Amino acid sequence: MRALIKRVGPPRFHEYSTEDVFECILEAIVSQQLSGKVAKVIYGRLEALCAGGVPTPKKLAGLSDEKLRGAGLSRAKMAAVRDLCGAVAGGRLDLPGLAGAPADEVEEQLCQVRGVGPWTAHMVLIFALASPDVWPSGDLGVRKSLGALLGLSEMPTPAETERLSKRWRPYRSYAAWYLWQSNDGG
Image 1 (tube, one colour):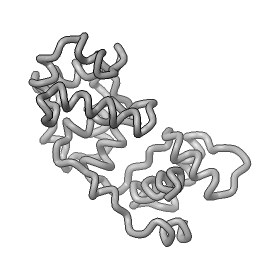
Image 2: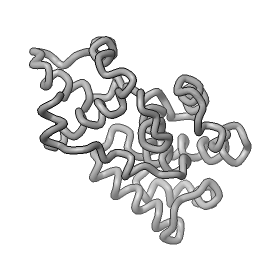
Image 3: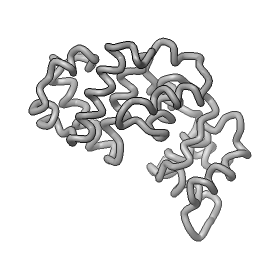
């Protein structure tokens, strides 16, 4: 890890954080199981549909299913976006209340939204809420890079990555970020 940190340099993931937790959740939903490039294209289309501005629950709720599908959202992601908008608008999800809440509580609240699972919750915790000790054990990039970093013959399972991550407590978000940089050629 020391060599990776030296090669990549200081962590920059909080440079990309957003104070708008809604936007971060939306970006995470859009990017699920997609390359970063494809996710950016789809998110850009959503911004364009929202008059070139940041998508908000109100703006997205006003878009037809056809427009959302035309932007590139699958039916499942469209349903997740609709549920997210409804949860925020209806008060089922208190976004300002997430700041400063313990990570497990944030994850529990977020996972009540359709299409939001642990991975999405972890992305929100790391990138929007700047939680220093979040470990996305199921993330393929983290698992792949961790296996390469440790010279393992096979990619570690999520349970193995969880066990191996303990050495980086209480800064596992940083370790995950460095592992993503390694996977991206950083």
